[in-house]
Image 1 (cartoon, each protein chain N blue to C red):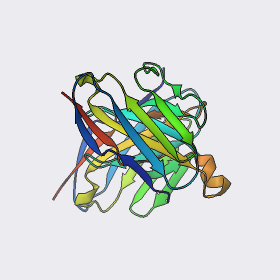
Image 2: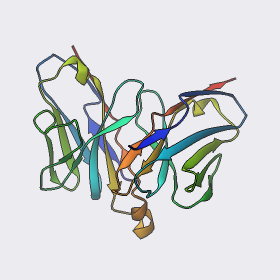
Image 3: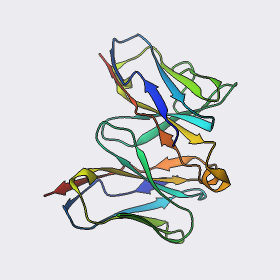
Image 4: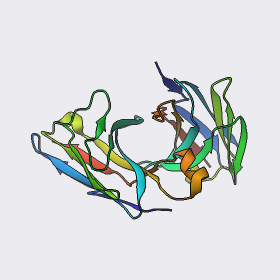
Length: 109
Length: 121
């Protein structure tokens, strides 16, 4: 079967750095996506990785290792508004998105 | 980026009734999708809305319960039929845009509407 694993919940301090990991086992691979979802709102697209390596976009970076079936989302200079759920999703060989359950990130002052 | 308008934003419905959710995008898109997200859980794909033909449903979802229409490239509806409390959930539409050039289109990035929060009593 196909599955995406990510931690259920993480806590970090304002101004710090946090890394949210995602491991996956899918039938084929056509890209990995990270989304942010604030409580009661729709997911918003954060990043896309299809080749190994690090993609940086402001305070957020996303890393991919296809051989290890592993990705992480790195958030720097954490702000209170970063408190949200972070969803990892992988596009399989049929171009269907397989979603992780999400990681709830709690930011403390 | 294209705007996705989804309505209603929320509704409270009685058991046995039906609710139709609308999703309108402001530019042509290649694909539109309907998802369900139950409290505290991730997204579950209900179906892919195909323009001019029947939707493609995922395992566990059937047309009689979740009829979908997509009369043109920018509009789709999802109906939740004969509702029960188990249907209480957030329903989301998403789309892959037809803009941004080949490189962007190749990424197949999905963008979401604001969602419909449904409570069934």
